[in-house]
Length: 230
Image (cartoon, rainbow, N blue to C red; front, side, top):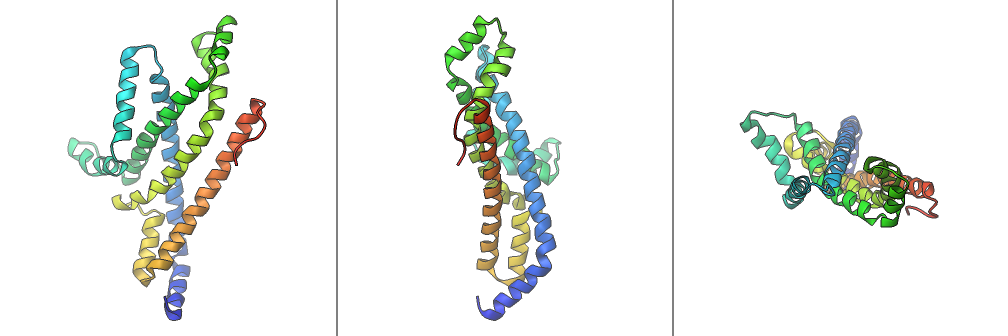
């Protein structure tokens, strides 16, 4: 980009900052809401996958494998374009949040199931010896230990969810990617615009990662484990 081209880009960037800031808020909103839904889906399907009832366990496995085995891109487009044909119409943001929550929740379900399975059997046996029921054992003994194991893979999923949010611009949501693309179209500064987009996503991902590392350290500290997230 020439000096004059950069000057035009910076001038237009200054005018576009409010819109870019609004787009960033939309991206953060989708990330937070999608992550919250994904967490609920992860625990629901993860616990169901460990149920003693064959039907419940089998149904959970089918749902998890279906959601993991189909493209997030296709899931989002199905919710936005195909669902209205069945008589259900969701707002574009709701389609995005639902797609993110279901897709990443399915991956999170495997994290929940595996983390619970990784808790030493002796812990459960000791709880049974103390007369604890299944619900109390899960809440007081198993989940606190499994939670510390869940945080690192949950951090990875959260970052992946954040990096998937540019898909929102494909269903008319005016997120960060949409606003940056408007800046690119107005200035012709493709390299500069997308470099800015890369840097903003990197900064947000770094902040989310730092927050999850803090949660990991806190979870391990409660268990008396020295050390934590990097």
